[in-house]
Image (cartoon, rainbow, N blue to C red; front, side):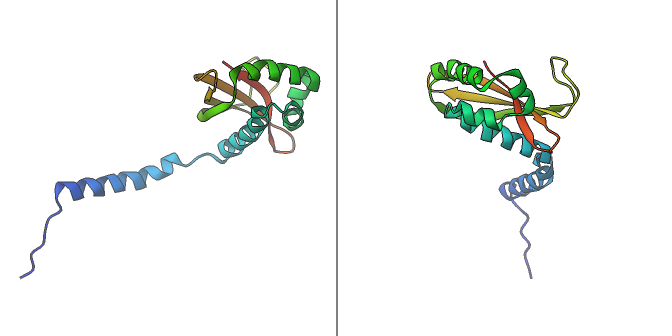
Length: 147
């Protein structure tokens, strides 16, 4: 005679958790646009973390370069980042997309990537990066704001 054992509560709970994780896996898949925009923002931020104004300016988008010269950007970057100290931690809060800028600029493809950031001298900051997908299909930074 074969005795079949019914699953215990622990086994049933583990099975249920595994099923929920498998089903939810698709819900956590990220939009390819988000991946590309976040990568562009992260690469650009790496240059600002080094306070490398020239490199971050060169990597920025056309609208950024039309709004400020490299010298003015160097001055603004130094003024904004130096008092904060070194980067300790940065994590994405959200990425959103729109075809208009918040200030009513021209239509286009825009992404807003928001980070919760901790610096050595300011542990609770929010960085907002505005990107535009330019004509060549590449996401480039056109705005940077720290609060």
